[in-house]
Image (cartoon, rainbow, N blue to C red; front, side, top):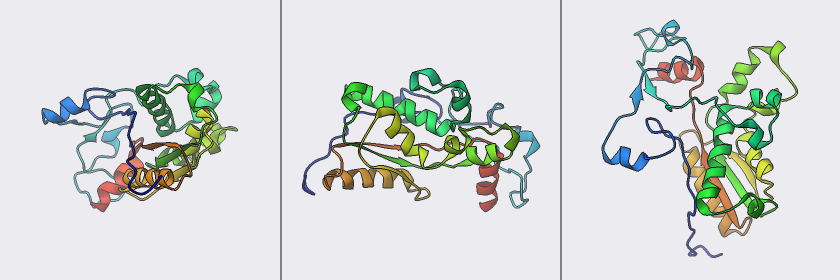
Length: 218
């Protein structure tokens, strides 16, 4: 493949604030806003709210943009995960697995087509907050805790489940992570390192930590 060879996007899947997994374009066309209060199931927002953003450990923001569905709901058996393992898996990883499968479905590609293929995975890292949260409850750790929250698993878990043999890279370039994951996927295709690629990204605010840090930063 040369630098001038077009690269086609043949499948797409997403989760978006306000709409979940469908009708994003219509939502944007109508200029709707997905802002909401912090969902009660994420964390106790009132316990951290304080109007002065400069007060460390608190959250001045009144809300944000959150997915409408339960981010912890997951069909673990479909992805060959036992209950104990699934409990340790970062919701980012779960959502990426679901969206990768849906994107392949959108492209008309089956699991058998993907198995053993030279397909790469370039996945933007959101926040490894899930791993930090598990570290706060060490007696509850298990054999799966380490890989359950590891940032590398943003990509590696997809490669393992789909049995892909191409590059498997988790990308952290701050707010440019998703764009850079797409860039790296294109570069890898042009270099002949893979024949197809998943480019993905996911960012969830799971607890008060990251929310507070960013809010305090301004």
